[in-house]
Length: 67
Image (cartoon, rainbow, N blue to C red):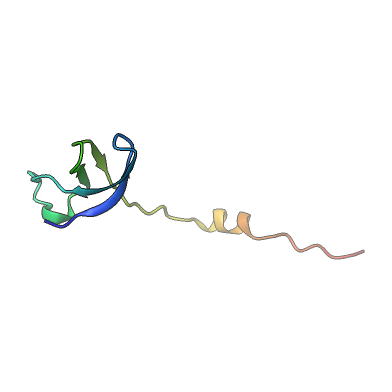
């Protein structure tokens, strides 16, 4: 099993986290991880947010010209 070193709030330090036996078929890519020191669990999730054209236009700086 692969493990990742993450900060554990219960252990108050960096600890190795491993995926539990996954019943959903994720295998080692399971988004759930368990601290090997204390057994606390975390869910790691990555998601993408689409940016619309309108939102992209709002972020651009306004160029002002001198009169």
